[in-house]
Length: 234
Image: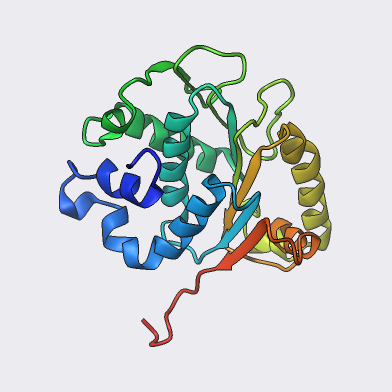
């Protein structure tokens, strides 16, 4: 079941971890709405999903866990994971590699027929099942070169494309970021590739804000906002 149900996968993945080290189960009540939306995307109810979350709420970790599931399900299809900096994309690479290789994660129980075939820490690429020109996972900052590096057949995953408040306050820099997104990230998508944006929102003119305007009323696009506090201030 965990091959097909994301919520089940996230719980099963960490069953061998010490309870205090688990990521998903202690946060399941807060994150289930996001997980359900990711499941809808995988069930082909959505083409674009945007998730706005406060800092420190586990959004990048959830994204890494989700992409580990996708890579196991479709090891021969390339995916691109991007962010505002190489430091963040390196955390994607390291996090995925840990899930694929560390015995405290039960990833191989879920995907026993999928093997790690190649990894490149310099290029931040991971290949599963077989070696390919376009890797199962490529992690690359939005300001880094993508020419000839990858294509996206399954998912384009973008996490915090805005570097911070300084960039958010500059309309010129946000305009340049939008152009980089269109020319460097979106252009890598092949037909049928889905798109996920997870971020802490800084401006209505950021990539998520512009996508929300562009896809207003589109039933195949969903824009979720997760508040820092609930209605009780908790």
